[in-house]
Length: 114
Image (cartoon, rainbow, N blue to C red; front, top):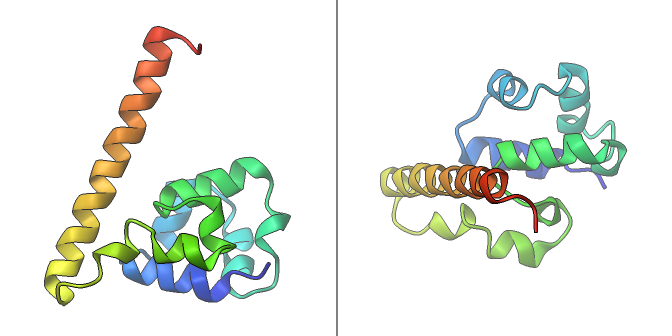
């Protein structure tokens, strides 16, 4: 599946440049640019890169596949207050999501995988 437009839109919503995305994911610039330009499919990425990319963009893998997933996405659900308030809501929800993911990761390390 080609995700160029969705990737561009998501990066714009998060006010993220290509350089920022590269730094956040450590995915090769050529690979990300080819995704952005619809030269390769999302499925062409290995599973680790898919996961890394979606984590950096605060979405699930299904975000790029399923319109319903995009409709109920945490960032997309923040777009209803006006431009400045939307930006604040998006940044806050992304920080909360990152915190929760980090907390769950540390908790799993502490308690072991059960």
